[in-house]
Image (cartoon, rainbow, N blue to C red; front, side, top):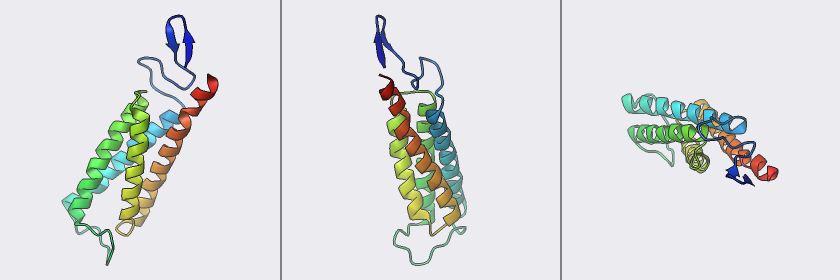
Length: 143
């Protein structure tokens, strides 16, 4: 941010009060929203009918209802973080990075149960983390 007589002025990537974000932050927020929604759908499937997923002799083997609840809670957190990023809240970026990383680990551990789904959501999480990590650099360079 640059300083003016009236205080701090938002940089090129920082939203003004009441504005939505654009560029990498918008992409990251939408990726978090999609990852969260997909995690909730996966969790609901695990909770409703835990005979859908199977994995034989797996180290991280939990009851599939437990995996379902883990995904639902992570999905809700990802959606909240995505909304925070899209609304330009100061807590949105760190929350998005942290929850994206936790989701990435959870999806990695879930690969034996549903590989294509998990790898797709992991890709979204990685892209969101990357975009959130990069979105603050343009503002720092503009100072």
